[in-house]
Image (cartoon, rainbow, N blue to C red; front, side, top):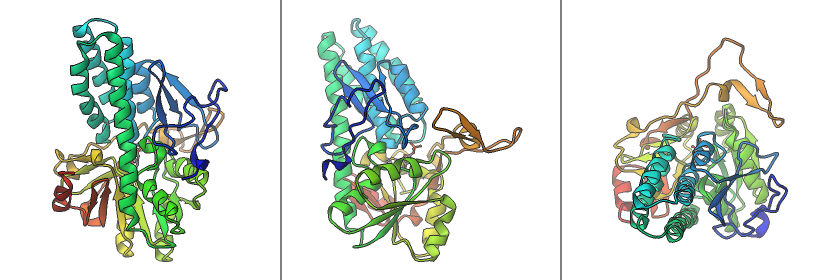
Length: 376
Ligand SMILES: CSC[C@H]1O[C@H](OP(=O)(O)O)[C@H](O)[C@@H]1O
């Protein structure tokens, strides 16, 4: 991939991006650990008009950044939570017992920030043994041990995206038009992307693909983030409203659907951004395959089916008002009228043609095909 997708924006202070070569090579990342154990987070609420970075040096700020969706996307919030433990470790200067107490509090704060994406809990679980083993080290070595582990987790997640992209390539016909929903790109994964990882792999393989991105109300990840990423990478993309999907399917304008995931149950049911289930129903009605791209860290074998997946209800105001670039909000709903805002829905495995992971394809989606991938 050319450097075309390596954005080097001006930061809030006007400085150049502190990491001209983000983790993942030429894939850019929405969150990175800086020297001095501070996080730099691209504020995704401000895209596409403003590439604004926030410097974060306290774990409660990291939890707020996840909760308030400055950083979002299942793998990205897992990576950010792991880095949040590093920030907490840098602030915990005491002996081993006090360090472990501080880390336990940080874990609880981060784990509670959003409920649906299993990657958040998975990443924090990955860090638990690292915290335990580092507790008796001197402060500097203790902090650096966590920083190395969190950075390693970040690199591994980007590598998983590249591998699943290669696996997913086999599903993309030459000249295909791919529909996607929400943003499952570099911004959602720490680099390269899952659904957009397959798109990038197809583009790199010169398959002459083009993308139709659903705007994805109410947060508009498709219109604001997927369009921004693909345009930067010079991959053809057009935005449609979520209500247009059936029209374009009926016109045979879409060859396949590729989406991300926030949690995949043991039976292959998939929790993803609200609207995915509707798209899956429309795709099935028109014989269009729907593929789910996700690293294995998104598979939750402790969840027997989609019924066990917690669905986050976000604030009504995120649907009833539209944030404007100047910081104000445009009211869309009359005073006194409520709004419902479930942030995810569950697509049953029977509507998923394949789950694409770095370990290979679970095809068709289901308990047996996932079990075949279980041992890596
Ligand atoms: C590659 S994970 C992307 C996944 O996360 C998004 O949710 P949110 O933007 O609320 O964090 C959406 O479900 C995407 O498919």
